[in-house]
Length: 166
Image (cartoon, rainbow, N blue to C red; front, side, top):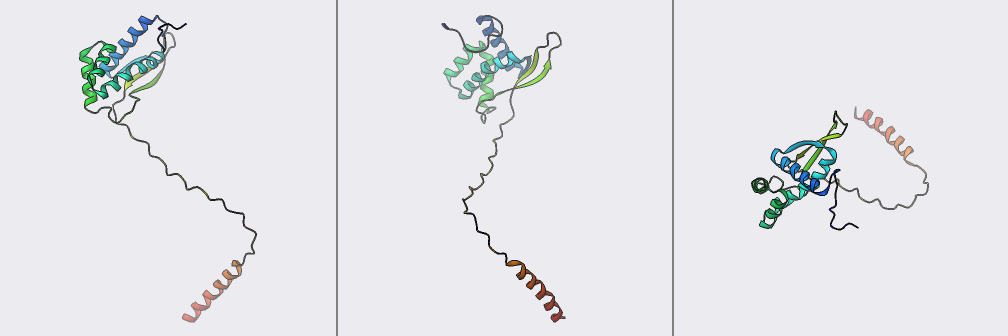
């Protein structure tokens, strides 16, 4: 049975060490705006850090207290909330972090990444105009083509008019 087990990645350690590792990585991420770590840790950190930014966007007292409880640093939380108040993430609805792959680490071949906080504004996707629905057209019966003689007649009249004008 689960009995008070947390969901998410274990990162090869017990629950208290995983929690401390995520807290430490989140502090480093918010202080430096980008850190280099393993891919698994970055993916675990993303789900830990993004709710803090969402709380900062709300900006109320309850959200601030939740963020302080999660990070454990009042000054760092105040800095994050100030950035959010300036509108750094105002146009974003999630996706506050970016993970860029670097390749394997030399010693143990672990996949390394850089995780950073996205600061540039979000550009909305331009929706393509939907093509008009095609109406069902009944198949036409084969009609004799009479345009060819008419085209020849027009062609023969045109030189005659030019010679008359001269």
